[in-house]
Amino acid sequence: MTIFDTPERLTLRESARRFTEREIAPNIAQWEDDGKLPRELHASAAKAGLMGVAFPEEVGGQGGNLVDAAVVTEGVLDGGGSTGLLASLFTHGIAIPHIVQSANSDLIDRYVRPTLAGEMIGSLGITEPGAGSDVANLRTRAERDGDQYVVNGAKTFITSGVRADFVTTAVRTGGDGYGGISLLVIDKETPGFTVARPLRKMGWHCSDTAELAFDDVRVPAENLVGEENGGFVLIMQQFVNERLGLAMQGVATAQRALVLAAQYSKERETFGKPLASRQVIRHKLVDMHRRTAAARAYTAQAYEQAVNGSTTDPAVIADAVLAKRQAVDACEFVVHEAVQIFGGMGYMRESEVERHYRDARILGIGGGANEVLNDLAAKILGYA
Image 1: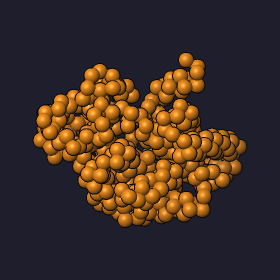
Image 2 (image 1 turned 90 degrees about the horizontal axis):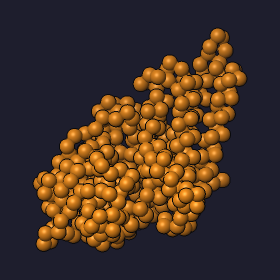
Image 3 (image 1 turned 90 degrees about the vertical axis):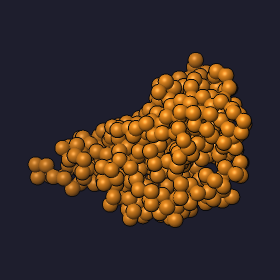
């Protein structure tokens, strides 16, 4: 048994699976074609108790933690969902934790509670055309003007940026480097704030992604999250949780692809025998199982470290980084083999494994590219 497998969490996972089978699986192909999720799905997920599982009750959540969010991830993939759907439906998992952490009751009432109730959609705006993983060099500028900030700049690759009602936005309020960064909550309807264009992607088709532009956007000073020039620390503290979430997406995708491949290998006959009768196929399934189980065990260990420790602890940071790397490697291997086992059918859009194959590619890029995370781990572990 791991931290994911307590009786209460197994019940939560089953609840998320049933919700997905009922509300998501019959519709996800259409949402992929549409390039977005319907807003009412957020309200349905909130009513089912899934939106706020990782947030305290005092801010409108269900009182769980990031482990409970991971269990929901497993349940959604078990039921036929996708990581693209998770990224879109649960974007608030990266959009509002900074606000909750700041304990700003006004911002919590205006943004956190409605989001967890499924009434608003939030997103996180950090990546820029010239600054992705290099957060300390972002250029979007916010100049103080009385009781407002005037924001100019651009963001790109912003998940849920098309549909979002607000964007928790990283801006430069001070000098160069990490010490001059702040977070502002910017309402989508603010004059000068535009969605430059929705972006077409290799995967995550049902998750809308946008370029955002800010042209003299005036934001009330009370929308500052935490202290001025204190945003970098808030961002870094939440990176551990984001990386762990992506690790679980990799694990859950691998688990689902393995189940689908094993089932297909028993049903599909070639030359008069099921695929599963072929030693080469059975060995593929064993290798897929082995890598998936190892990744889940490492990810469970990293989650346990995080909930029992501090997200600023180098050991916790390293475990999150390495768990994500392990899970991404396992996921990429398993979805590749799953498509191979499905053969021509695995290449068809009507095949679920085809979606997982496409969606898996972003996991080694988002939340810190593999290469960036390897370098970070090398420094923490004393190899650099």
